[in-house]
Amino acid sequence: MDASDKKSSEKVIILESGKCSWGKCIFCSFGKKECQRMALEEFKERISRELGNCNIRTLKFFNSGSFLDEAQISGEMRRYLFSKCKESGIGSLIVECRSEHVTEKRLREIRDEIASIGLKLTFAIGLEVADNEVLRKIQKGMTLAQYERAVNELQKQGFGVRTYLMANLPFVGNVKKSLDTSVKYALKHSDSVAIINAFAYGFSPLFEMWLRSDWHPLDKKEFEMLVKEYRKNKKINIYFDDYITYPKFPPELQKKLVGIGKEYLLHPYFNVWQEYISRFYEIPQSKKFVLFLPCSFRKPYSASRTHREILKRLVELRQYPLIHQVMLSNAGVIPREFENKYPFAHYDWQEWLETPQIKKEYIEATQNRIEAYLAAHKYSAVFSYMKPTSESFAALKGACAKLKIKLVSCVDGALYSELKDKEAGLIKRAGDDRDERDAHENLLINRKMLDGMMDVLRKRLC
Ligand code: SF4
Image (cartoon, rainbow, N blue to C red; front, side):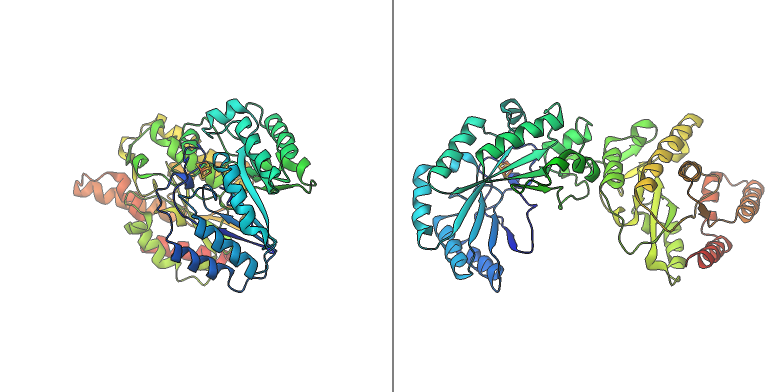
């Protein structure tokens, strides 16, 4: 299904009615959803509402599968849609369909149904790639011969054909060469062609390929480079994919990630998230400044005592809405808005088991991730409120130095050392067996330390 077509002169209706009869394409998550066919009354109500006061020339109607599959769209639904198009003055209707549902008999019926309406009906077929071997591997369930048969049938009966191609599919070998071949082939058989950037949504096998690092999506810049020669072709529409979203893990992949060392530092789940955050994510428009904060053992981070105390003070700032809070942890760089998303509230890094080697690896991996983040996302100023002795702070300092970005620490180093020494002395005198690290962690919520953070932010935020 193509969820990327949207323009002001046209309207797109995306409707879930029945499951795609195929449902096996490896990049698709929509088509796998169990879904009952919509009741006729519900369908009518939805179409009527959507087309209510519309003044459009073209309607794109997508039902995550095949318009000609009666198990998804019944004849009555179809005819109702045609009648509403007539009523609304819509001259062109584009629907999607798999090739096996394109039959001479069904097309004849439809031709009669729209004969008096004056509606131009175009069938969009998701071919994806003009290569039988790749079609087999991506489990498209269609060959080029089957595609051509459907196209010939449609054209013979006077219907329009639009072909969808997917750029950067796995198994294609040379991505550019594959796209060029596919575009040439699709143009030969269609009235128009749409090129869509492949992206791996959760619940699709392609997402698992991404987790295994067997495949990676193209970011906007890479995609633009790939398709730029087609931009001027009026028969081709190009979509980076406006529906790209954060990595969504299906329940069967969700497990608690507890441990330490490389396995939990460079875990595929964290790597995919970091790739998303540095290559696809866009920081909220309202955020002008970034404040890097430590992670916390308790999840989500904002439920921990350290974060609660920090937040209690931060909200006092007039500029609070402009501050983007970003946590640093073994899971990577985590903007506050993702703290509840899997796996950020479902991991524990066992800090007490850290060795000098693990600390070194942590700093290296975290610095690389921060560099990628700050290179991709620009802020007016970069702040941190972290222990000056922590590995996360060392990584942040290293990243900022490398990128020549000024880092403003909101921790008063002298005060921190003084409090740390005092705390260590108290522990020693009391024979307290608490780990010294815990004591230092709590220094971040010391009143004087928090006052210091607020002083720095008040002075520098403008
Ligand atoms: S045919 Fe379309 S809806 Fe069905 S599985 Fe393939 S991409 Fe998904």
